[in-house]
Length: 212
Image (cartoon, one colour):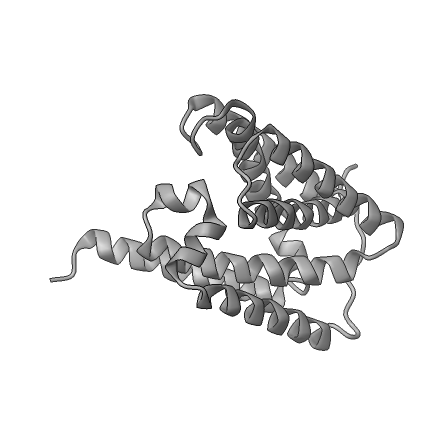
């Protein structure tokens, strides 16, 4: 008999996979719509992981981590909606942050203050280089394809691996579940980048500033 909890988990998984697919293959075209969502989600993760790495607490294990995550997420969401350049910087920074944390977890580093410092430096570097060299379109395409592919894979992992294990080290959890997931991630990321490049050859998101 199918239980209510199973149905809830299946529905949540389906939503996560569909969101990852949209992000991976249409991220740049839906850039404006995704901005506040992206800003909030990345701000939440950044705030929570900052508390986790700096103070050695569990992911969302304390009231402080919840408060910091929600506040940072709300700030990023509002700034992304108001200012194009901030939105691009946040997306570029989130790509640098995710890639650096993922790589450090892959090579066996543990969550801690050193990982936090390295990830923040890489995130800032990605944001600055993107703005200075006017790489907005290509970084947005790459970021949405890569992080969309990652969202799909991690959603699948969440369905079969205990949440605590995934939150502790999502890269290791995915590899332990099946090495094929890494291949699937790379395939989806590459296909997403290629599809977005081909579908946006003559499409460019217009810069904006919604602040009065």
